Amino acid sequence: MSTTLHTFDTGAVLAEGLANTVSAALASGIAARGTASIAVSGGSTPKAFFQALAKKDIAWDKVTVTLVDERFVPPESDRSNHALVTANLLQGPAAKAHFLPLYHAAASAEDAAVLASNDTAKIGAPFDVVVLGMGTDGHTASFFPGGTQLSRAIDATTPRGVITMEAEGAGEPRLTFTFSSLHDARLLILHIEGEGKKVVLAKAEGPGDEAEMPIRTMLRRAASPLQIYWAP
Ligand SMILES: O=C1O[C@H](COP(=O)(O)O)[C@@H](O)[C@H](O)[C@H]1O
Image (cartoon, helix red, strand yellow):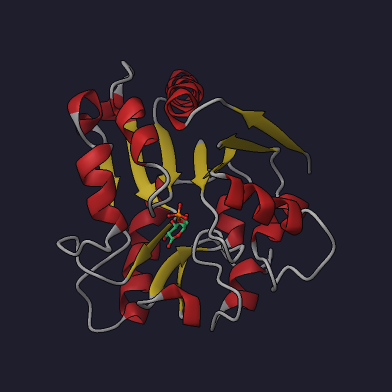
């Protein structure tokens, strides 16, 4: 499927522009189906976008928010994507949204993945909005190069749901939606910032295995057009 690059002068201008696009997509989903869903990424990039989106005047009580992926840590941890969303997105008007975390205080990451899959199945498919990030190693979601379940995660025939991932570059064990869960979002976004990430994207757009740079799965095989949002 196609990719479109949207370039902004600053991260602040990108945050507002992306918040406008995403809030419009959520409002459209609510108008069409009564509810809307969004899966967002964590890490360091999306904070300003979350803060801008939280202020948008839409029927947030009809929106379900979840995560594209999560570190297997409790929400009290400073590594938690759940904590990032709670502190920056589920604020103001957006505090009315329904949040479904991926982390569960289970005996293992595998048990938590089963709970997260069962819990998020009620969201329905496809997501209205998926906002992906990308690491400097070319990972997206928690599809890490060398990951324990990378082949399963990026196989289009793997059922929708949440699975575990462990990799040298991942830190803690991870919980991640599969490629099949994410790639057909009605609005599919890749949000990256900085010159370094632009170089990584250019490499990912070139030849090479998907397993080497898993973002290639979305660049090459996503069913939905991939909207790439970038600022210096
Ligand atoms: O560990 C993660 O990394 C990626 C990229 O994060 P960033 O800080 O480079 O923006 C993120 O998309 C993912 O959700 C997160 O778990």
